[in-house]
Image (cartoon, rainbow, N blue to C red; front, top):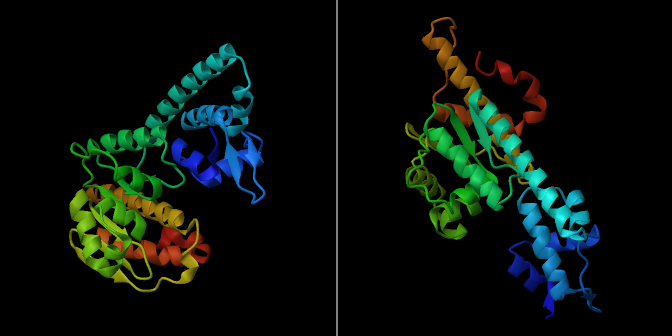
Length: 287
């Protein structure tokens, strides 16, 4: 058996970039490298890669996976049992954090492994029984598109997709999203029963139950890795602050009032654009 790096990546369900990285760090080297620089993998290398991908999906760090690939079976078994206990502890920690949260932001850097899919489903199921708002972004959106959402309640969730993620959520093409972004944003909110949505782009479209808005102040500066993560973090923080303000207003011990969701989403878009300068003043935006 002799597979090119692209064929090997397809069989393993990972990216070509991942296999290149595994080669660079010495995790799994290819069987051969052609004169054209292409990497080729044989049966032995594919067996090692399958193990590496399996361990990675369980959440093991690469620095621990490398020695495991060459370790005796008993050593691998003990390592997996120890990691299982660690995952149980992480689950307990996550449940503890959720129990005291005012809002949840989910998806940034999460990945799309089976572990990540299970995490997204469990958190969404938990949200259905709570009064906590959530922002669903990035990998959580891609995983959401694959989930059976029959029993999920997303009525307190805000979806923040870019056109590619929106296309996966609606089962259409990116071209169809771009042809009518306003209609796509409305369809996203209605299709998933969400409280609101922000379809990101040169002009971001905001859709909520109370109406729609268009933000035209975006610049190419936002079209870079990490800017969407900033949006998620800022929006989750604002949703959490809104929840606290609502509780305080109900108790009549605070003169401030929470913003309607549509206005809140417009505020976070402005804050995202000027975050570096406005970060110290975020707490004043409701005063």
